[in-house]
Amino acid sequence: MATGRYEFRVDGRLSDEARAAFLDMQITEAPPQTVLDGDVLDESHLHGIIAQLQALGITVVSVLPVP
Image (cartoon, rainbow, N blue to C red; front, side, top):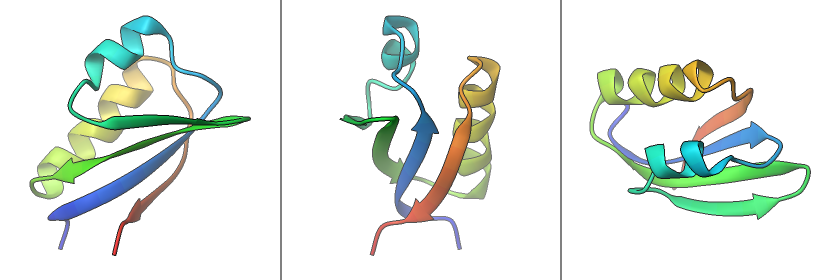
């Protein structure tokens, strides 16, 4: 089940363009990574977020549900 809150860890810092694409998520710098935290509506939404990160050239390190 993909519904709920998720944490996305990505390499490096996000550009202003990338930050603007994820305004609905909390973004926290955790050098050398950045953590995006937000609600995921369903599995399709989860895959869409990952695809959007990759389309922006961002390397996804991990995706974990937040208990």
